[in-house]
Image (tube, rainbow, N blue to C red):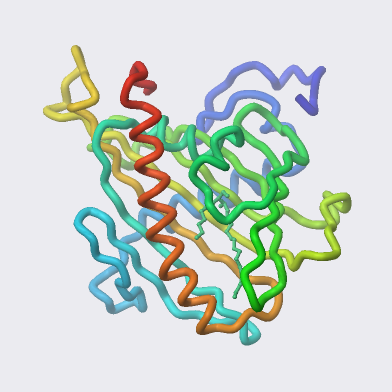
Length: 261
Ligand code: 6CM
């Protein structure tokens, strides 16, 4: 913990189920604000095409939408993906997305992952180097990542709701993260997961009774020149690949383990 002597380290519950050290960290006000904002954004529907969301993947339960946007000539298309998978809980999904030891098992674009700071067990700061994609320069990303349970009672029909939110951290807070060979991407990502239990069973729950509804939103600014059409082609290929691979990975990891709520 970065705040070893704080009396605020006692396990208290807040909106995101975070007790302890994260709440007294200098980044906490920002983490709390961005998580709240991103959760609200993830919960907002994609409308009937009237508000700019265009569907670009429609494969059974998995649907992906994007809005084409550019900032200073760089593609920053917001993405929203929805999926429903069976046999796992929201917490399990978020656990495998958040914990660094599993990342290389499901994330295919990584060259290196470093932890720059452990703010608390559920809040880490990462520096990731991604594989270079020709003809663009290699990219890295430096971001805080927070996992928490949502306790705001908004999704009354769900058994429980968990999130992981990743958001770029300020380079001046982590000057050691500077890598001269990489262009830094700026990202905001949220994974929201809701557990549903068949017939609202409360006893003898098995994996056959579980479904997990997933909403994944991301906005990535490539940080420096990258050809727009190549980038859009990469996103169109990589996001469905990521979501299929990641959800299959979690199902495989969980199937012979006790259910983790
Ligand atoms: O959310 C995802 N992964 C998380 C854990 O790694 C985290 C990471 C996000 C990084 C996404 C940005 C990498 C983009 C680098 C490519 C830019 C290259 C430009 C070249 C153009 C020719 O939130 C899953 C991310 C899935 C991404 C498809």
